Length: 279
Image (cartoon, rainbow, N blue to C red; front, top):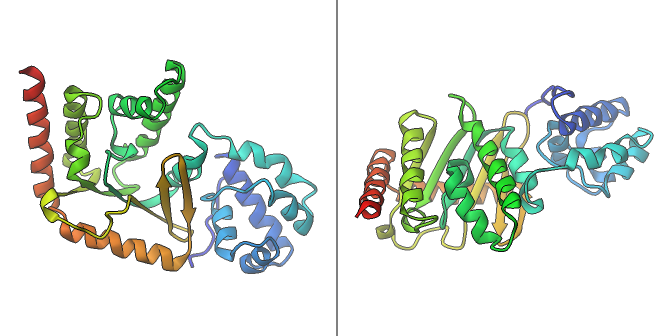
């Protein structure tokens, strides 16, 4: 495993906790594995806490304070570090994205959040919460748009998305919204910000018919896979599980259209939506 990354404690509450945990652990002369064994988690998980890619759970904070002699520091600061603008089941995964160097995602039913336009995100959030006040929907949309800003830079992270053709054909928010969303994705591809492949209907049965895949790699922490259902989600760092999902993603990419042919299809579907809207 790579050596621990030096975090800037002033960058976020999560980074502060991670830096303090590493300092306190090393002061006690404990390895990540030794500390993890005493709080009933893996050494990998301790490393992810120190790298700022995982959340410190409220029930673990007092145990760490007791073992490391930190006089209630983790218990006092755990709540602030875990505050999030994202839904609870997705908050940890969204925050891990910010530290990822590579993200690989297969989306079977909808355009992934990092590729959504505000209009598409609004339609999705409204479908999830049909009776929510407009202000609540706008907060969710704003958070999703802010997430996507990690793609504004030219280098990091690498986003490699395999989109099922069903996600492109499902008219979400209307044909005008779909035109704008697919044109936005095509623009990101042409700017070399993302790699996108389309898994066409004609590919038939494939390795991920049971659900989505989201894999994240980090500079100084082990990779993660995120599992999501309706209103639920969890991160998993088990090496065997991550390896299996990576293998599944690789098989999907092998069955999908090439990036060049995928771009042609995305732009063609966008044009179809535009013509249908005007006619």
